[in-house]
Image (cartoon, rainbow, N blue to C red; front, side, top):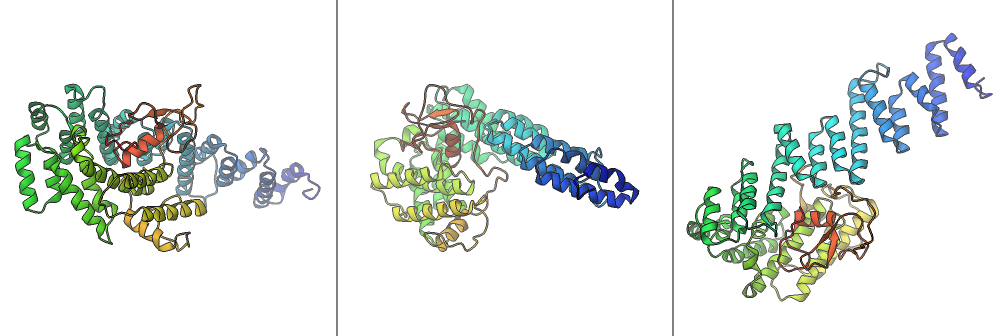
Length: 466
């Protein structure tokens, strides 16, 4: 009967031989229907308890909701599975399906639904990451506070991003309300002294107003910060010297100390991103009104170049692939247009970019924190291996990958904007730079701001797309 294609008749009499034979025949029929991509395979897989085969069938066809229902039914005991298929296997299957469905929602610009998928299987780390990468910051804080300790690291990062949002808001800063709100957000983070110092350093008010915010944050006054900076310099404590200089009456002094230290680090052969980024991150909070002064042109140019280069490496580490070429080009153009003394060469930047592009294009590398595999790239394997050694691991787990805000896949309306990064039409929300004309996608703006605080136009103005 099987050879004649009379499967229904064969299956109806197979139990007369044995249940084992019937199951074997059912599995053969299921395999045949699956090869034909026939939906009639569903009852056969359920009858034999072959959950994984059915989940794979739905997943391959993009029917992730159906795959989720099957996996969930198996975990809850609504689908009888063989005793050899343990509960742990079903649980892992459910985790995998939820992750795939969440990724589909996320790339469709629906970060909240992606987070819901992760929360449904208690994956708090990826749930928080989805909200952060979708720029749902206020919601992420609320969720993180409810989740508690398991989401502490992500919650603290979101609070920092929200504080940046209000700290650099051009329409209301330096209003007392936004200043105090930024301070209150940062004070929700346990280890917050450096974060509060950044807020105080960036605040552009009068001396009395600055002292007031210093007092609110529990930090020394302007004059005391100047003395503490001098003391830190004498002790060789570069980080605290930069921190206190930024909060002193002469914040520009931090540029000389900080940039000199970063250039010395980059001159060593064994430097890493994590060895130079903390100082550059601090320097990024120097008051904009001081940084853009003509007498600080050279220091400003060096700061922008160094921030752009380290930002490019951070973008590689976080897998922000769409802005990596733009960051390298930004850095190269600044070096061509301005006379600076930095331990970087335009040719070296080109070599690094070529090595990274060869790796991502040829082998579709999903995580650049993986160890070098020995692949011979267009510029040689050694360059790529050296690049990976400098990147090290991303401390904020789960945040690797591009940002997708709500509406990222929606079609553009009649007011077409072209990205100054790619020259292509922007799909989804648009972010205008400080000249009011240049535009990039909001996704690219968010990723850029997370690795390099300064505008792509090279003006020294901080970017605030949050």
